[in-house]
Length: 280
Image 1: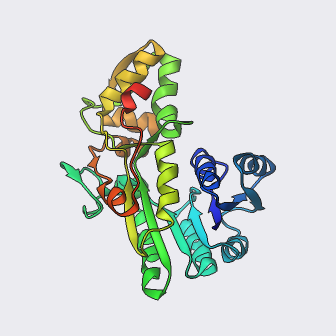
Image 2: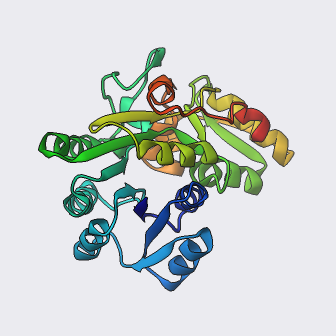
């Protein structure tokens, strides 16, 4: 299958390109710079020069493809929807896989799935209008699919590394928020790449949570990272975390227990990394 992918030079994108190529697909990937071109080429894709605001580029690239996977992080909901619309127009009846996120469900009060009500923190509240518009294309003959990844680990570990591990390296103290008893819905980078590949065969209008089955507490993650660094942990109040991290602190403070049973049942996908604390 010929696939067009955005965000290919990022850590999720490179892993997903590698998985797609391994499965025999041909991949074109959006690249906004020479450095990005080199990254997607090294991963096994052909670069398409442009950015998320180059709607004609997105539309034309999608029209050459049998499926599209949209991984790039947009600057706003408006930008994300405009890019999604251009690519869905281009790919027509081909599969369009859109990236959401598990934080939109807020605190879950136990184990929940894709039917849980949305209660997003402000940092991801914009996703609702975008995902609704993307999924509405199923009624018009499109094949939209939404993948909602949990908090990533493995690979470059961007968010956890930036907000928890790096401060731990600098100060000797890995932070957690409050008592750290809130659960994080984690997924390993390699498992997420496999889920995106599996989602290419999903029925139109499907939504899948991408989580790995193990949901340790934030304090357990901090303790594992601190042990690896030879440091210790430190508790921050939510206000202190907001001062250090900005509005994303409210997302890190969520207590989420989520299941990927739907993806496992419908797509035959199974997470292989189920011991995140050891990997941390």
